[in-house]
Length: 85
Image 1 (cartoon, rainbow, N blue to C red):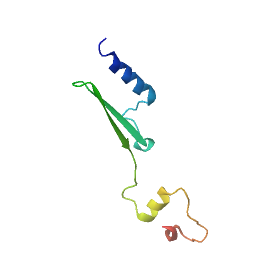
Image 2: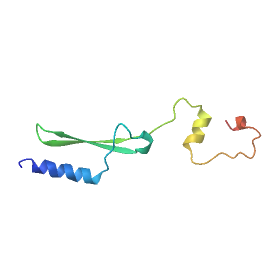
Image 3: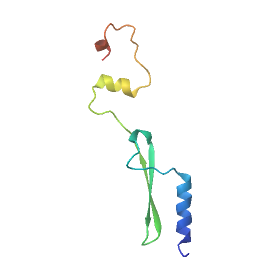
């Protein structure tokens, strides 16, 4: 009963944010992650906030440009896909 305030704080954070399963979550689905840790020695809550960005790796620059932009290139003038890439 003496650590009831920590239990209430825990419930508040759990109700504010959805829980994730680290083993099954797809990194592309996450944009921001909040990590909370209780330091039991001094009864403080450590908060870390992470911004997650994914980038294509091992892809040629012209393909990377097509993947990362939402606008598709104009294919009318090309006779072959190699002209675009």
